[in-house]
Length: 79
Image 1 (cartoon, one colour):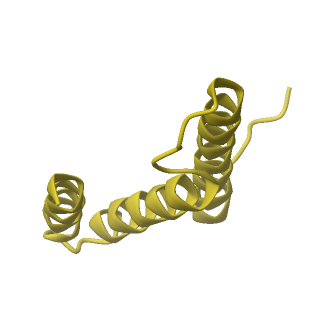
Image 2 (spheres, one colour):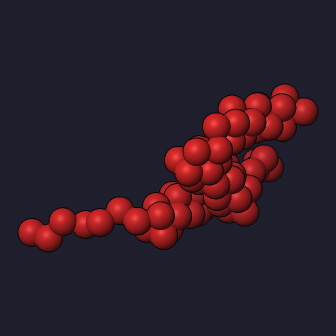
């Protein structure tokens, strides 16, 4: 079996697909229960992209990227 090389492009695609899948699941479960969905496909996809960006910046030695990203997401959730 061939070894898969995990490049940043592949990590980006995986992060976007996971965010998309979680958003799709949230939207379809809200339709089945006939309730209003707080966040859907766009929200979870953008959040996963934001998380990938913060993690990537942290990997290329921008030391405050991860704490600043976590703080900004936490403040957004609190609002």
